[in-house]
Amino acid sequence: MSDTIFAPITGRGGAVTVIRISGPASFDILGRLTTLPKPRLASLRKITWHAQLLDHALVTIFPGPKSFTGEDCAELALHGGRAVLAAISAALTGEGARYAEPGEFSRRAHANGRLDLLEAEAMADLIASETEAQRRLAVEGAHALQSATASWRETLVQAMAQQEALIDFPDEDLPPEVEAALLARIAGLRDDMRAALATAPAAERLREGLEFVILGPPNAGKSTLLNALAGEDIAIVSELPGTTRDAIGVRLDLGGVPVHLTDTAGLRDTNDAIEAEGVRRAQARAGKADLIIAVAPAPNPVFPPTPPGIEIIHVITKSDLFELIPLGFQSVSATNGAGMAALRTTLAAAAARLTDTKGAAALSRPRQTACLRDTAEALDRALATTEPELRGEELRTAAHALARLTGRVGVEEILDAVFSGFCIGK
Image (tube, rainbow, N blue to C red; front, side, top):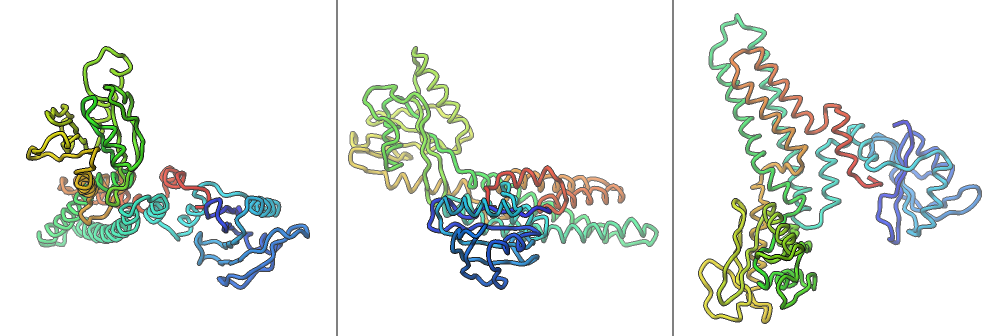
């Protein structure tokens, strides 16, 4: 981290572009382009290089360690033109700074103790959030996970101290209640972690988005239903059976939950090789879905077979063709719009249920889940052994696994995995 780096931290095309500079030579480099203001006081300055005026910018400097990265930092709020950004970038490069790699600002913040890995991942998730539920997961869920992790760590440290006491003073005739209390503490900690692990799939689904698949026979109104839910013409609608031959999807916001809704080929036996491939893909897509919308047309609805273990909502289409609605089914009509509001409400409720973390610490990434699972498994082994030394070793293994969750253990491949997914400027 001896280099001084820079990059825009705002999106392209706006009226204002903000460039962040970070590193040991930040103030020296910037001082050759303008007059430095007082720390943390945004000031209007002329930016010049080789006697040429490049822009008028709002300049703010942040001496380390009280900055985003923990290093000396500066931010330049420039006019948003591409030519301005190019000129300032050339000047900074010419004075010895280099363009930042993806995630390099955040990685430096982590290395300098300004961000732990959970905070860094939460920030990345917040930037990428598309819906209100994803925003809450990135803010509230991450805060709950950080609080839980701190509590788990404190409990584990206390358990390790108790275990060391049992090892160091074996001849002191400590009452059996001491070891019983230790085992109860370890078991309670393990159970708390198992409870958090149980909600991990829901949090991961919310972060990535759910997959809802429309499944049914040809001419059942699947494409019409997709278009109606999307509010635009996504799929071709035709009276000819077999029009849809491949999966066609659209991204929806259902009650704040991101959902990828997919229309599939009509399920039937066919000698058409292309249509048969479409049917195979439809069945494969359904097998990986979080929820299947099984549709069948009125007046004689026959629903398609569906894979086991996947939630299903049965929908009768073309409801304007009959009057009585069979119990247990929903009905819609593309002709008059009947039932569409109710169906959307049902789908939103299903999306909320499938992503409900029940207020637990939100393990929204596979890395987080793996760390906590390793910790819980080490605690299982600690409870299973009667040898104090072996139990102490398993507790140390658990502590190491838990430390990986926040990044307190310097495992380089973990850092690479976390920060490589960041955008330039973060």
